[in-house]
Length: 105
Image 1 (cartoon, rainbow, N blue to C red):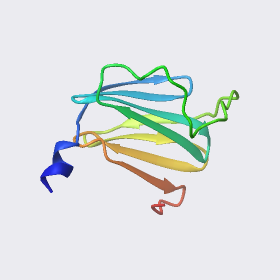
Image 2: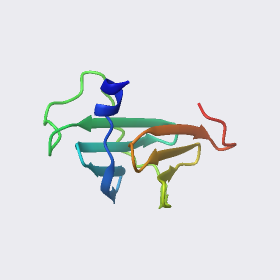
Image 3: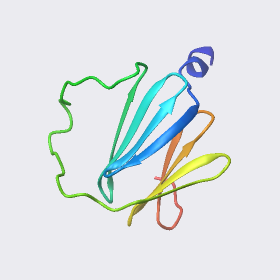
């Protein structure tokens, strides 16, 4: 359990951009990109910037932007697309994904 706890990071701040949200954490950065209403790309680094290398896994660039909304409360940041609800816990940066009915997927 100690190893799991050492990898957790809390959210210091976040910035909405055209295709997602970038989170500044106390231990690095996290980027949640909305590729399509039902396709989400999450990048995380313990460093202060993301590497410039292209992903070997994600090959589509999704040039057309997908709309989403952003809200927050005391405990979490909530990103909502037309098909998904993505919740990020502020104290741990844990992410959960739900469909529009609220069912966790």
